[in-house]
Every structure is written in C-alpha cells, then in structure tokens.
Image 1 (tube, rainbow, N blue to C red):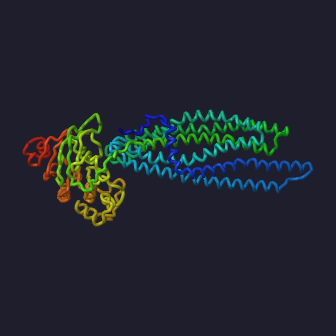
Image 2: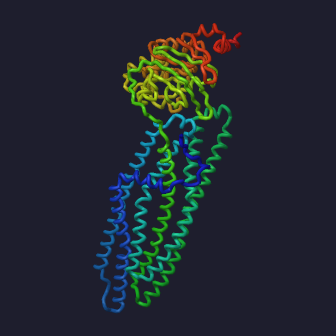
Image 3: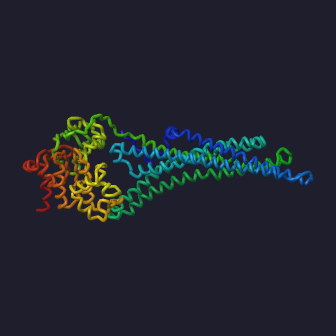
Amino acid sequence: MKRKIDSPASLDKAKDFKGTLKKLLKIISEYKLLIIFAFIFAIGSTIFTIVSPKILGNATTEIYTGLIAKINGTGGINFNAIRSILILLGTLYIISALFNYIQNLIMTHVSQRASYRLRKKISHKLNKLPMHYYDDQNTGDIMSIITNDIDTLQINLNQSATQLVSSIVTLFGIFIMMCTINVTLAIITALIIPIASIIVMLIVKKSQKHFFNQQKYLGSVDGEVEELISGHTVIKAFNAEEKSMTDFNKDNASLAHASYKAQFLSGLMHPIMNFVANLNYTIIAILGAIFAIKGKITVGNIQSFIQYSKNFTNPIAQLAQIFSLIQSMIAASERVFNFLELDEYIDEGTKDCRKVKGNIEFKHVKFGYDENKIIIKDFNAKVSSGKKIAIVGPTGAGKTTMVKLLMRFYELNGGEILLDGINIKDYKRKEYESVFAMVLQDTWLFNGTILDNLRYGNLNASDKEVIDAAKTASADFFIRTLPDGYNSIINEETNNISGGEKQLLTIARAILANPKVLILDEATSNVDTRTEELIQKAMDKVMEGRTSFIIAHRLSTIKNADLILVMNEGDIVEVGRHEELLAKNGFYAKIYNSQFESVS
C-alpha cells in the first residue's frame, strides 16, 4: 500500500518529533568527528568571550584605583598593567573570532554534505517509486521537498547546531563568572531563568504547528506555480487567468497566514526577553551600587557584573530562537524522511533476459488502478516473437493499460504475464526494462541538443548511429533545416519545434534503443498524412523480426498488422487480421466504418 505525503489540511504539526530527530541525528552522525571538532572550537570561542568582560573590568579597576591614588597623592595610574590587560584582551578576542570562524566553516561543510546526501537519496528514490505514486502526487509538492525542505534543513542545521552548544556554554559560563564576582547578585540574576523558560515554552508550543504548516503550504504554492508555468498556453487559450490566479491566491494566502503566525510568535521572543533583561539590568545596577558603597564589590567588578547580567539573557533568547529553527528543521526533515520511506517497487527477479526472443502471453490478467474498480477483468492473449500486433478499441477500453502492465509500470491484481514462458516478475527489473522501447502520444524531450535527446535511447551510440536512426524515422530532413542541425537546442518548454517534429524525434530515439519489443501508442497521431506514410514504411522495416505492439485509433495505419486485438471494457472481443475482422462485420467493422461515415 502506498503511503501518501500528507496534505496541509491533514496535519497541524510534526507527528513524530523525537523519531524525526533520531533519523536526522543518524544522518549527521557520519560526520561526528567533524562535529566534535566544531563543538570544541565553539566552546573555546565562547569561553574566551565570557572571560573577556572580567578582564576588561580589571582594567577599569586599575584606572579607578590609579585615579583615587593620584587624588590622594599616593600614586598614579599603572599604564603598564593596563597595557598588559588590553593586550591579553585583544588576544582573547582574536582567538575567539578565529575559533568561531573555524567552527562555522566545519558546520557549513557538514550541513552541505548532509543536504547533498539527502538530495542524492531523493533522486535515487524518484527512480524507485512505483508509477502509481506519480499519478496522485502533486509535482510541485515533490519539488518543494527537494528544494525548500532540504534548504530549510541545511540552513537551520548550520545555524542551530553550534549555536545550541555556544548558548548553553555561555549561559553556564556567565553564571559561573558572576558567582566569582558576587554570589548574591548571581543568584538574583539566575531567577530570570524560570521566567524566561516559561515564556519560551509557551511560545514554542504555540508556534510549532505554524512552522509545520508553513512548509506544507509552501509545497502547495510550488505546485500552483508549476502548473501556471507548464500550462500557461492552455490557461491563455481558455481565458482562465482569473481562475488560476484565484486558486494561486488561495494557497498563497494560506502560506502567508501560516508564515505570519510562525514568524510573529517566534519574533515575540526577542522583545520579551529584552524587557526581562532590562528589568534585571535595573535591579542589578541598583543593588551593585549599594554593594559598592558598602565596599562589598569593586567598581570594575560592578562594570563586569552589569555586562554579564546584560548578556545573561542573550543565550536564553538565542536558545528560544534555536528552538524555533529546530522546529522548522524537524518539520522539513519529517517531510523529507516521509518521502524517503515511501514504499518502493519490489524487484524480486533473478532471471536474465538479455537473450529473450519476445514471445509474450497474457493469462487471465486482472487489473484496476483502484483495487475496488477493476477495469481489466480477464485478459488473455498470446503473441509470437517477431509479430506485429495491433490493439484497437474505443477510448477507455484498456489498450494503453495493457502495454503499461506489460512494461511493469503497474503490478497486476490477478493473473500473470509471461515473456518467453517466464513470469515477468521473475526477470531482473533493470534488464527487463531494456527489452522495451515505447513511443507515446504525449512526447517527452528535455532541454538540450537534439543529438543528446536522440542519444537518450542509447547512451553509447555513435553520432553515425544517431543520424541513421533519425533518417529511418524521417527526422533527418527537418533536423538539418535547423540553424545548428543536430546541435540545435530544444528549449525547456520544447515549444521551439512542432508537435509532429517532436514525435519524429521520439520515434528515432526508440529506433536507436534497438529493443526486442517495440510499443507504439498512437505514435503517428501528431504528424501529417504524408509524414505518417513515410513513418509507416520506416516502422515496417524497423519492426521486422521484432515483437511490436501498435495502439491506434486511425485503423488505416494497422491494416498490415499480423494480428489485431479488438478490446472493449477491458476484454478482448475480437481477434484476427484486418480483412477477416471486416468480413465478420462485428465490433471492429463498426469502429472501422465509423471513421468514414462523415465523408459520405
């Protein structure tokens, strides 16, 4: 059973926070040595930063003591001592900055490598998913997982990992340094922790679901954009701009609403923590002045302590911000891992099929795209090697479905398909796929040169073999009329060549693959009558000695087929050659004659 990626409406927050975190830690654990080094440098950088205010306080104390001594006439300012303190302070700042740079460099490398591995896994997964997954899933949502979710994971991992360590070390380090100055003031300052913790917990609890929804709705918006771009011609043709914009605005508004709530709630942390910090700062300043008057603390230490107390809330605010980053990261990671854990097609085959002849048999085949709606009920047919088989019938009869089942795009609900007497499930899938070449009614070409598009059928083919295949498919002439010939670029939308020309290229690509079994699904539907005749002659030559299946609505194109299978509602209703079926004056004759009724 296929597990679908949940839609935005079906989830409010990450279902398995702890489980997703464990999976993420497992991914990055392969870089644990680098991460340990990054943490060491982060701790070192933080410690040097923490120590600096107290050393700076010592310089202030030296200046204050020197000024008092000068006023009393008992001495002056010790500039040598101040110089030594400032040199030490500058050295600490430089080392701290260097350590911080190194840990950032290491974590950037780790996050980039982790995201690289995840993208690689997703790319592999895309080729392992069963065909029915793509029938249901939104293309934009899949793209969002590969781009937005991986980017969110990468950026937040880079920012949050060392910041988490630095913030914790800073929090405890500052508290220890404050205790070395004055324990009473340190305890008063520490009372801010439970207040800040309660604030953070409340905000995190409220914002978590909105961060997850933000990632989900981002996928929906990507889907809408993908459809707007790929279908812009149809949108224009049917004057549907307003409707398409309405649909987009709806998803965009949902994304904006979720993002607003997520960012607003996480943004509250900083001003609230600032308010708490300023309140604490005021209390410490008043108590510090009282202690200084009583001689319990030096002026330099007051300066150091106030600086520490001012910075004491910073790591708490940082931790709160990190929790927001982690929430967003886990929400994105969960979508990535859910995708990676989707059920793949099963390849249990062990048989080698490189020497198959092409004898095919359908035995009591039963199939439905939905298990509860069976469309192929009991299909039986036997095809000898090297024969040209035509499959005809009305729309929805199951013609294309049968060849998809033959190519193992979908698994059967019942019965079996045999290739040379062996169940197709027993063949190695990779080798089995190489037995076939298929030309569909809907062409597919990629952005690149015509030469590269043709060579897609056989990556090891020479330029001569590619050109020969193009000549066989009657594509060579139009290719040479293009400005750059075989090096002409097909653009991303493939709209700089006509539909018929695209079909010729896909036929040439199939010829180049030199398959044991050739499948033509309405392959000549997009070409003119003259070109169709040329292709028919070429295809007759190509199909010699090769098992071929031809699906066609224009029955004039399959007159010379060795056998015609007439399908209706998922079953074969008639079998025979063209002349035989016409003589029966049955279902085939009715379909054939209907094509000429409008002419009379």
